[in-house]
Image 1: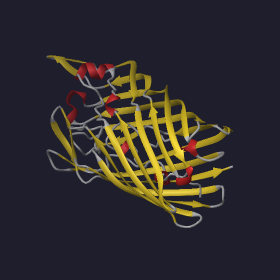
Image 2: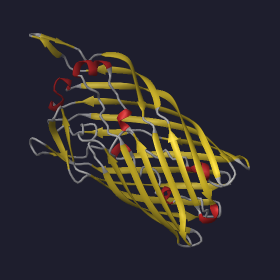
Image 3: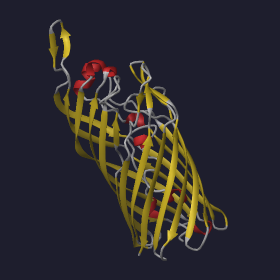
Length: 378
């Protein structure tokens, strides 16, 4: 088994998907670890997350269950050597998304829904310098779009508001530096992903709003161009051998989710606020793995994400989280590896509110995430 395999990627895709996490719209892995694979390599993977996000109406105590839907994410990557010192990779994934719906039975938020999808294309070049140092960078092209519906008494005059954002492409970049010492399976990599700007067609509609006695106007109705950005991210990853056939890995990642500000023209003018209110997040992970046989390796990891949020809106029904994961990788042949993993996530309790009014409390929320990956060297 190649000493380039990274323990925590045995638990593939969806493991920290932000459709059920503390902040933002991040859905799947944005890792560029594939660029460190030896020789020519291709992989395909599928991951899922099954959240159990149940709450109770703050006023009535009635159940508000299954707010976040199960989701799948797919990805693929192709890495090839250009020369002894240069390599390239193409990565296809679904980096952002959301699928949230409050049950119609809840008087405060029933009918509130969010659906967003994306497609990401990343091209990476890596150049090997002397003494184990390499530099890498590339371009990211991402398409994103979605729909929002606000419903329930908690939204007041915005009850019945709808927004459609057209699918649009944006461009960003990534840059990184790494140090490797293969004889002890050591690698330390620092990667920066830039923010990506989008400008989408925004189609808004909503209820008539009283503006004077006997006068109500469609203040929410209209179309405009909406500009927003998905935030940058900085991640530090490290792994090293600590004993024969045993590897230790760690990761720290920072994402300023508060930079994602979606404020459609009509909605903002009518309400004086944004649709989004995410907190910045720091993610920590520590893993250990063991090669048990010539063909099979297993891993275990723990992780935590902390956000600076002090309040939560209906479009963000989860808080900080902690979890554990297990995974395994099996060499079917010398060139073909199948890996799979599962993670269990526990979310902190939160109360979602609007303008200081608690609407729904979510306690004991959890999620199960996992995936499978097929990798082939050639």
